Image (cartoon, rainbow, N blue to C red; front, top):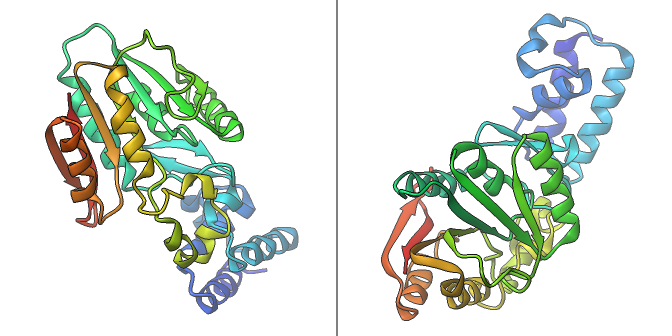
Length: 277
């Protein structure tokens, strides 16, 4: 079959299901086992590749996210395994990572201790380890399955992370103090989850989405307990929902955190809040 014909079929199916037609080339490249850039070398594809392409497209049109179908997602120029046990890394979360890298660069220590709460795929923790030469990174998650994915990602990216199965701080050693605690916690209000895109609410783990009645339950717990685990003048860095900057900032103020700053994502939405004790 001609490659152009296969691409046209793929684009048509995606368009009918209101899915970005640019995914057509990505799926065909995946079916062929080559990069998107290498597709130009192929004017024809074998029948078995076309069959595989149709299977992939059926899954996508049934609402399964592209990253779950192909099993990986790029984040901070690193490649991460993803499956339905972990959230798919979002580009906007890179803003959080970049801000933490910036903070770490201004800490004058031989070793900067960082804790990533609700680590999921490990994309934040691993990206920090790869980009901060003097970092000692710890990462926790309540989900054993998520931690298994995160550990494979650490090995895949040659990162050294101490992983802990824990409901936030519960299983952490009280004697360890961190220079930075970072988290992209669940922050969707419970009553909003049913209104999310089908591919999100039907595929991504609810435990990683549901932030309670007001979407703030994890922020409240982390902000309250983090001081016991932070060094003097240590930093707390959060990803937040686009409409949560004021509420999260107020929680930090109520708990006597200082220098509270809000940063925007690539779409100019409030996305990161950072403060220190």
